[in-house]
Amino acid sequence: MKKTIIIQASSKSNGNTNRVINYLNNNKSFDVIDLKTKNIGVFEYDFSNANDDFIPVMEKVINNYDTIVFATPVYWYTMSATLKIFFDRLSDLLKYKKELGRLLRGKNMAVISNSGHNDLKNGFEMPFIESANYLGMNYLGSIHSWLTEDGENIHPEAMDKIDSFRTILTQ
Image 1 (tube, one colour):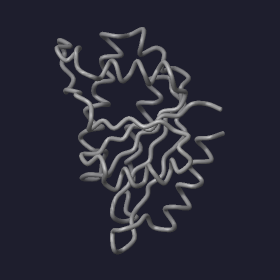
Image 2: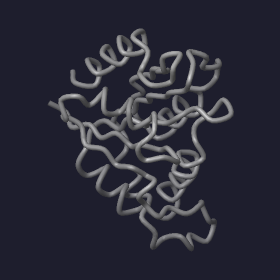
Image 3: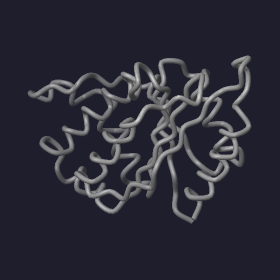
Image 4: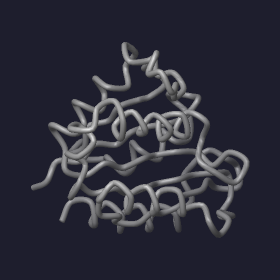
């Protein structure tokens, strides 16, 4: 089986995104990296953030996993700021660490998003699709999950989507 890692990109380590990840990863077959626990600065043209956690995280991901799942809440109709900063830092792999970046070719990318309602707007996926294309990665798709009216549980329809998504990730 191919190894999969979920990169959690929420401002809250134990919030709804984590709830969705735990449901997706109910059999604990995927590893998880919580970006909230990492020190990853913004992209700098002089690579002055070269000693933060970004390169070690990417070395671990690239050297050990075939599939990368980005898990993000939807904030203001797009990915979280945490994930946007992470994506901006992929530029390090195009300039400063090119050899490492080239190793992304042929790997898989997928996305799971969540919000309070089933209201994901058209275009949300575009940054992921285009980034995968640019990096030579295979884009496996995305799903959106949402909560029940009381905000306490994952909506049953979303659970069905997550179950189907899990099947795609474990093929």
